[in-house]
Image 1: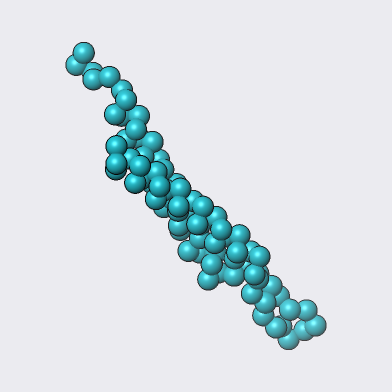
Image 2: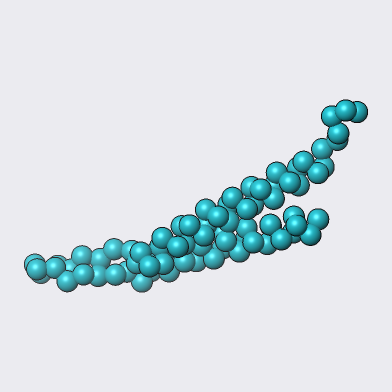
Length: 79
């Protein structure tokens, strides 16, 4: 039960932390000064890429916790 709670906590932290990092990456754009009149702006990859990775790891941990929780509740097959 403690492992299941740990997986749920780490998974939730990964999803929330990764989501915040992705949001921050889009909020604080990186702009490059072009040779023309306009400057080009895009998402800040310093926050975007780790945020995506952290979100994916969090989702994986939540799925692993779900599998462990559902397998511990199922009745034995040998019945």
